[in-house]
Image (cartoon, rainbow, N blue to C red; front, side, top):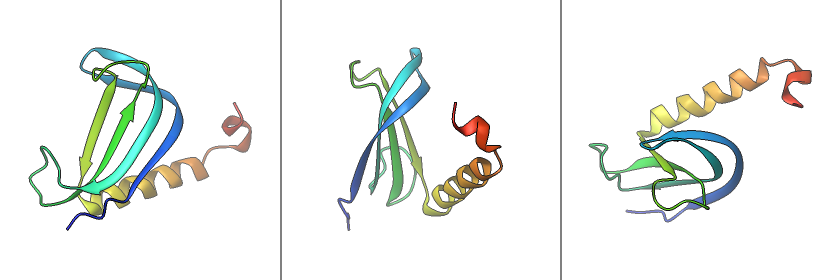
Length: 88
């Protein structure tokens, strides 16, 4: 069963795809049927540059435990950064 729960957020950063590095402007996070990951459902994260055609995209398909582990690792990493560096 699909949840159709989708979140789209604006981001500032860079991503590396098949054509090299590109500016990341948006991220879409959703839980659905993966295209490549061999599971019935997965958490998908698409990082996009909306000014580019389909080549300006990187996609992740993660099983739920990997997605949670990644989210927790991101939060732990940010918590350990001195406040002055986060403001840059």
